[in-house]
Length: 143
Image (cartoon, rainbow, N blue to C red):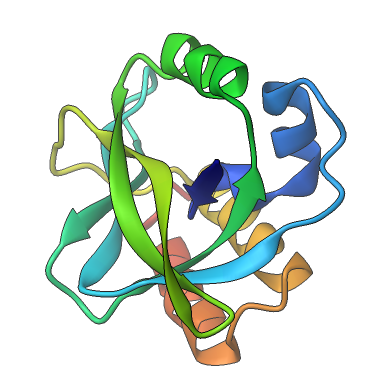
C-alpha cells in the first residue's frame, strides 16, 4: 500500500526515524484540489503541516508501506487522522493513505517544520515553483 507524505516525512532522515526503516525510494506524487497549510497546532504554539481541500494541489511523495507501518503512524501522530486519497503518480491516479490534522488553528508556521518540508521537496525534485511557494511560509514563521 502507498503512503502519501507532503510534510516533514518527505525529509528522508525524519522518515527513516519515524518509519523505523531505511527509506530508499520514493516517487513524486501530486494530490489535486488540495492545498498545504501549517495550521495543526504544535505543543509549542506554532503550526505543523496539514492539507485542506480546495486549492491548486499539493506535491509530495509516496512510500510503499505495510499495515504495521500505518498503525505505527496512527500511534505516533495523535493530532492527525489517516484518510484515503487519490494521488497522481507517473501520470496515473492511484489510491494512497495520508494524514490530515484533526484540529486546526490560526497559528504561525513552525519554521523548522517548513525548512524540513522544503529540504524534502528539494531532495525529491519537486517542481521549483512549488518549492518557492513553500519558501513563502518562512516569512510567516516563528522567526
